[in-house]
Length: 129
Image (cartoon, rainbow, N blue to C red; front, side):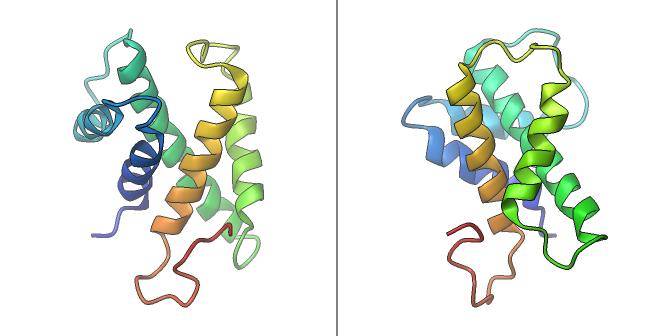
């Protein structure tokens, strides 16, 4: 089964591993534990991995919700939707700077939407480029 959340989270972790070397491993752990067995507190790499999986899930949900209103919602609309949901977390994402959080959201949304493209799509290069 094609799971854009899993593929998007993995691709985002690979892109961000320069800043967080153990991130791909931590994302795998989070994906295997999804949606249950989540501890209350995370160390930084685990918290980031959990956030990546959550953002990938939000991005996929937002994409599908927006798709019911328009044929192919633009990536920036999906990203705005994800940011809107995360803004309602009352600052609980305090383990990343605002610029790092913005970059993480952008990368995860981009990779999740790219993962949703059919393998033989002419636009397989990248949804946002």
